[in-house]
Length: 252
Image 1 (cartoon, one colour):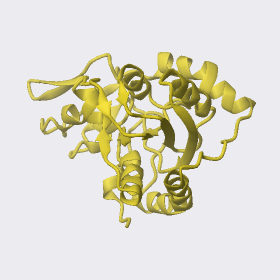
Image 2 (tube, helix red, strand yellow):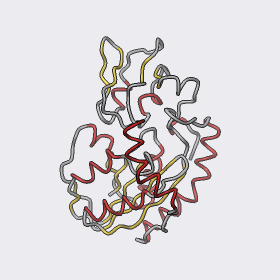
Image 3 (cartoon, rainbow, N blue to C red):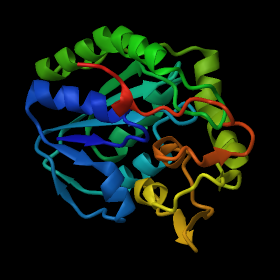
Image 4 (cartoon, rainbow, N blue to C red):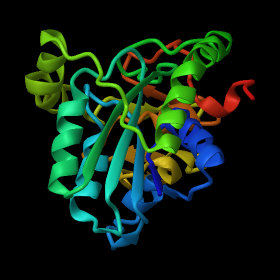
């Protein structure tokens, strides 16, 4: 079974590619997490986790869900992580999670996809994003081939920088930067509620037709990138930046 968490579509696209190739079922973790559903899941032997990279590891909300959810029948687990540049030493923590679940760890694949983290970085234009996705195809194809063959992924890079970013920097990054305080809706807001619908943590509610953010945010960027009126900003950091979501791209 394939489990997919996706903020703005990159992971969802990769999970779809894997599904087409191995003809297995996808479970949408956005829905599971949003509904606070950690009931046991009958998975079969193989589990594939497809998720973005948050602070050089898989998102905490994904690892938390996996930690408390029984995967009935699971024996082996692969991790496929997309990122804007690098996954750091995420593999170390994925291996630990596999061991905790008493599953055979089959490795972590890194796939560079278009950046969506406009709370800190710039997102590419649609034309630039399409080129990045095209460049990612060999890595996606290789990951699929390994999974189909029942083979582990090749070990990723693991240098001092990677260990530092996934190690001490990860909790520091969450503590200092992963907050919803700077989100707000400008005058262009139409009160459609799309942001609240997309939030996997139910951290957005509408008050008098306007979104209000709570304190439980994972910085998936779904609210800001799926706003149809482009009314949402993250302080001044997102001003003038393209909003990225995979569905806009012209890809096959």
